[in-house]
Length: 237
Ligand code: DC
Image (cartoon, rainbow, N blue to C red; front, top):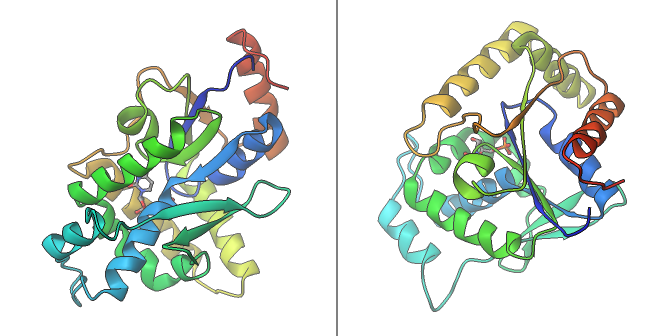
């Protein structure tokens, strides 16, 4: 591509957004930003500081004071670690990549991500990272709310049954035996929560290209992206 741009990738959970985003970031020599990791890092911070009660009520005032404190700002950053474009998440100088992927964080993160002030904090951090362009960001609201002017927007989807099958196989390979029907139920539930949230709900931007990868391999998705660049007269590979 002639000059670096912002590529926004949004879509439903378990559609392979990060695999796709990492692959195109690697091809283009761009930075990959997993925006869900930001919400996970804020969740870890809130839990560690005792701002989340047992029934997932959040002490938003206490959290606000910490997140927006001028004296001790909360800093979340990413460091690329592997040749596949993988990166690790750091919170205030500590590598928290493993800590943010636990079941406990997954349970609480959707509640934290629904707090408008938290979204404001994450959006501000993403703008600091994205201002230099040359980034691929994946999330739920990047093309609609965070970077509505992103040069390339992609909205990813796949049939719920296909997503559940992929997730089921992934969990099994990690030794987690969860019935397929339960995985499918969880995917449908998360779709509903993401789409019906008051602030920045998941939706396809009017100018986002739709990528339904239900019946596509990763290689086919990369080819689809190359074709998209050609169609849009952007060369990248
Ligand atoms: O993609 P993930 O499962 O790591 O995302 C974690 C949570 O953050 C999930 O509840 C959706 C939310 N999220 C969001 O609301 N907006 C984003 N841009 C990215 C993630």
